[in-house]
Amino acid sequence: MFSNELVCNILTYLNKNINKEITIDELSNIFYFNKTYIMKRFKKELDLTIFEYVNSMRIFNSLSFYKYDNYIISIAFNNGFYSLEYYSEMFKKVMGVSPIVYRKYLDHDIRISNKDIDTILSNINNLNNLDNKIKKYLNNRKPTTKMVKSIVFK
Image (cartoon, rainbow, N blue to C red; front, side, top):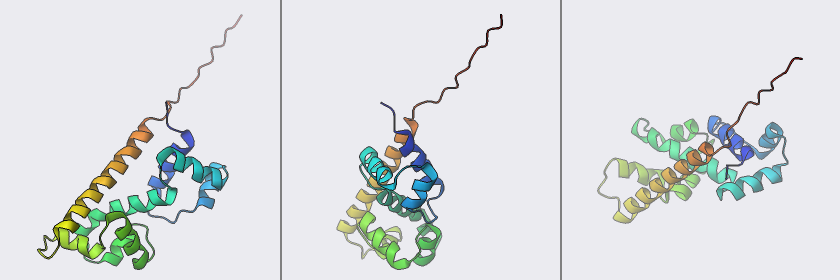
């Protein structure tokens, strides 16, 4: 069975615009489907909401910024979040720890607990699995074939 074409198109759009503000109204206008249908179809196909996906991918993308950026607020802004508070809230929801604890983990701070380390590693694994699931879903798109009509001249 192939992946749903609408959901594939939405995922492609989301991935290209992941750091921009995205609304369901915008998706409805772009793809010419009712917003309720879009939300339900996405949830049915992927077992997560559009905003769960967007926030998870934004957090996932933000993890690599910790190697280069010392300011959590700029990491948040560079990854599509418009407030530090919301970024921190989503980070904690997705990663199970605060951004500060995650930074301590990267710095090999001895004050970080084994429980926090396990939580971080587990949630990084979850994000990798989600990323792979989406890639697999997109790769399972129905192939497009160009129909060639032959014209027979008499």
